[in-house]
Length: 259
Image (cartoon, rainbow, N blue to C red; front, top):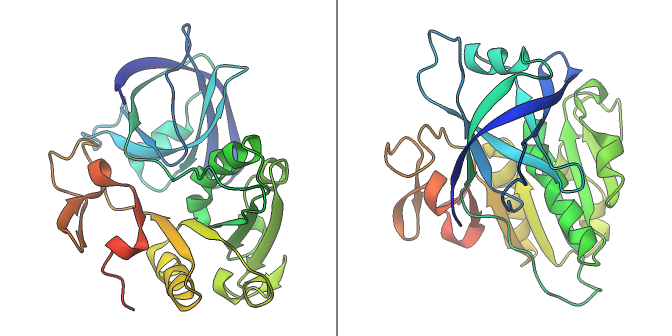
């Protein structure tokens, strides 16, 4: 896909949590096509310690409003600066980058499971919306430490059934996502996941044990987004690959995840 460098305008900036901000960006012209699982590299202005762009997953694309949504975890100086953006501000973005999740042209009976944890839930919203548009009924399985860490549940509920686990049991079932009872009681045709690496490895183990096809969106450190800096290399069955260029979405069969 063609890549663009665009100055996008902040339409709104909503703090969803003390650590998370939802930026909705727009442009005077129609935004380019973007697919679920792709990401953007944003330039952080005004931060003396942030020299490289920051990769942010595409959270959602509202085609009617011509908006791109980015869910930003404010964990360092660069992302904290992004969290301070106000409506009317400009954010320079390179987009769209990376390879997307697979969108299967399958029968209506196809039952996809989308598993996310932490800020890794971000790309699953757009993925779920596209699956819904294609006529499928995705199930979201979202995990967090506590109910206060759950993000955008009202948005996820627009596109499918939402199952929840929290480590303290304050919402949904107690435990990790791979301990949810639905995984033992139901059949899923395809699993797509994004979140902390230990969580994704556990999801991958479940997928292998149940012989379920599975894709994972890796969150390796990505500095350039073009495969030039080699910061995001992942060992795979095909050798060392740059996650930003060959991923971030990989079928787990290509990953050397055995634990």
